[in-house]
Length: 197
Image (cartoon, rainbow, N blue to C red):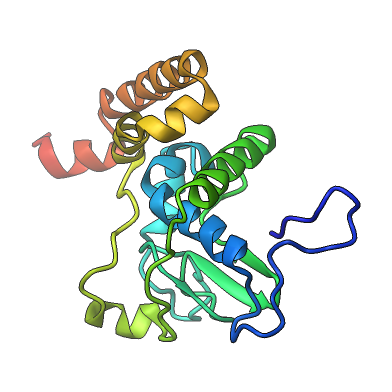
């Protein structure tokens, strides 16, 4: 993602003199993404199965490439955000189940809050998080499941206000009902592991 001026000729995230190629606004926008990551997850990863992807162990092929911590880096796919080139970055958190309109709205809300508050994205980690992630002690973890994400969104008053209180309340109610429907039924695994037939 990148943000351009009204004329569409100037990338507002680009600073060719910066090591990562990001302007102060770019870093602040990224800071907002990092600041609101836990709350955003309820929208960027809106299903029960979304969290099986985020928290999946590394596959034998090494091709999982899903983040599980709120970290950023250069061109490294094991982090939540990577900066693959000057003046832009990629947020690797969302999955294909995300509503594209809500996805864009929540990214803009988080990023613009980052600009408004001069949010700092935190330290850059240039390590393989699958192999060396255990060495990073202070990076927040992404939600483990949809319920954690719903709670994170509910606690993020700034993000809820930016998206609108009426929408936020309805979304939390809808996703909580979805979680409760999932959590209240007995799965085949639970039957096999807990029932003596």
